[in-house]
Image (cartoon, rainbow, N blue to C red):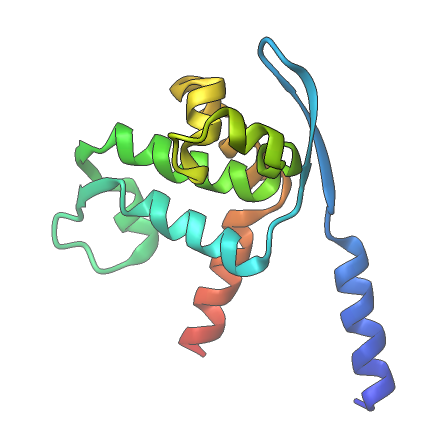
Length: 147
C-alpha cells in the first residue's frame, strides 16, 4: 500500500462517519449533537460498563459468557452521570457561556442532568452512542489491542 492509498482509505473512513445527529428531546424539540472525539466515545462505553457489576460464573468463552452474565448490581446514578458528561461533550448549546452561567452552581458535566433529568439523559446518551457507533468503536479498539 502506498501513502496515497492509505490517505485515501483514511479519508473514506472518516467521511463515512456520522458527524452530526439531530435528536428529538422531550420538552425541547430537536437538538443538534456533534460527534465526540473517539477517545470520548471509548471512555463513555468503558464508564458505562463500570456501572454494572456482573458475575461471569467462571465461563471463559466470550460468547457463552455474554449468555451467562448475572447482573449483581447496577449503579443508576453513575450511569446517569456518565451519560450527562457524554451529552455535555456532544451538545454545543450546553457549553455556551449563557447556559453555564444559568447553572453556575452546577458542575459543567452535570448541566444536562439538571436540564433534561435522569431518564431523558440516559435515553439521549444511549441514542447518541448508537448513532455514533460507540460500541463498535470500543470493540475495534479492543480487537486491535488484542492483536
